[in-house]
Amino acid sequence: MHQILMSVQKPARYTGGEYNQVVKDLNNVEQRIALCFPDTYEIGMSNLGMRILYGVFNERPDIWCERVFAPWRDMEQQMREHGLPLFALESGDPIREFDVIAFSLGYEMAYTTVLDMIDLAGLPVRVGDRTDEMPLICAGGTVCYNPEPMTDFIDLFFIGEGEEVDLEVFDLYRKCRRAGMTKAAFLKLAAGIPGVYVPSLYHVSYDAAGAISAISEEDGAPAVVRKRIVRDFDRSYFPVRTIVPSTEIVHDRVVLELFRGCIRGCRFCQAGYVYRPVRAKKPETLTRQGIAALEGSGYEEITLSSLSTSDYKGLFPLCDGLLDWCEPNHVSLSLPSLRADNFSVDLMKRVQKVRKSGLTFAPEAGTQRLRDVINKNVKEEDLLNSCRIAFEGGWNTLKLYFMLGLPTETDEDVIAIAELAEKVLSTWKQCAAQKNRGLRLTVSTSLFVPKPHTPFQWEGQITSEEYLRRVSLLKSSLRSRAIVYNWHEAETSLIEAVLARGDRRVGRVIESAWRAGGGLDSWSEYFSLDRWLSAMEEEGLDPRFYANREIPEGQILPWNMITAGVTADYLLKERHAAHEGVVTPDCRKKCTDCGIRHSYREVRCDE
Image 1 (cartoon, rainbow, N blue to C red):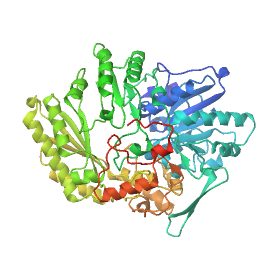
Image 2: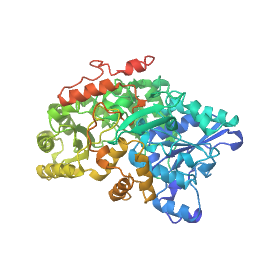
Image 3: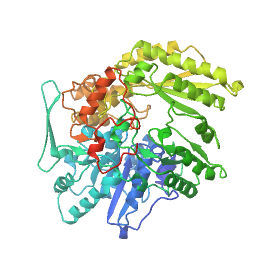
Image 4: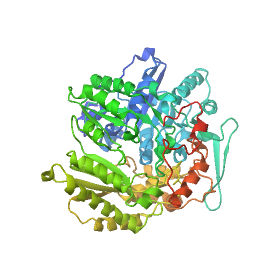
């Protein structure tokens, strides 16, 4: 191992030994869990969900949970050449010796990396090729709301929030193993746990056109699996003793989660729907947890995390409580996910007390018409007023995020992005406090990807050629040199859409792409569109069927056996409202009866 680490980039990715990591005596442990993140150490260690589950599992004295990340290609090559199987950071033991291998899946482009990690562990990638003596392989995370593309490789999926359901499954698995039961028998019992989806107990049929004609379940399996949620979020686990990484990571700071869910109803946003209902922590709880995490880690920055931070009711008292500690200790406080319609002078003063960073707003669309279509309740005057407040306060770095290819988008909507950026630039010229420094204004666009469990799940994605035409149109419309334009590549978004709306047959494509050299596909240096298109052709599938096709509203969706608690009727109603340009108010103004209150009557929706 010493020789290998001397020959690879960033060897600290693979050594473990970090401050606050958990090491246990194997003689006192009954179950070993490998918590796997299918990306590099720098990405995985920045993921708050990984830190939460790591802490929740290790609170149990009978369980030892260890972290596993995907090696970079140089390390993978060395491991394969030297016969070194994938190992856990804390012990260095091969994960094929563990009881459970649990993947955290937050991005579709990580699917080939999952297969790579299973294979590197020395295990068959397909469920049917693994024996009862091999570890249980499970997965959870946002993309598991459509688990179908990965059903060939994963024994079971957790639907919803892992803190709530994972340990129930692990306890059942340990009991079944003690009783000498087969894995198949265990899976039938596990399917009875709410929030657990066992794909082997469901059967899918297709019609001549390739669409799903029927989904049936075996006896004992629920027709619909409903997500599990943390009911009392204020009492939920927070990793106060957070691991301090041994090398630089992407988000090298304390991350404080304010609430889950979102009061808004942006029709493209999967997270906004699947994380409902809104559940928040009290400001005093967050203040206590944030300070404790800073004291226990030595970090010099804390960031407040949520889908829409400025919508948190207790934001001002929370900021004040944190700043009372942060200011004398020279710790900066950052607030991402700010909305352009509620950025205020008071909030600005709090954000810049210790260290001023750049601001980011996401109007998503250039015209009010299109913002109404996507239900992004932000008006142009809101954005310009927020920019004015920021510029007068001394900010001179601003990023604006937009999407291209949104349903009903026209060339006028695309050109309007440039016009809006010019208005922001004009606002800076009128009121900037430090004009001599110049404004750094960045406009970024990405290609719209239709996601399951959203009102836009039926919409088709525009073709890559059309996206590039719109990129060119926008680029030519941006005439000021003060505006920098960045755009996301269309190729990755095409495959993301295929995987997001894929059915079980897409699993063959994932395996074919992986066997052709795929892995770490979320990294541009390793992604290959040709490899994916060749894999689809080899398996007889058309990417346009999954990505670009508008799905008829009456058609069975691949993820119909999964529910996030929001009714299909409500999603359809929102889709129709989008095409009519009708805006739906946020949850604080009016409950629009999305179904979440009926699905979780025992949980108060903290609007």
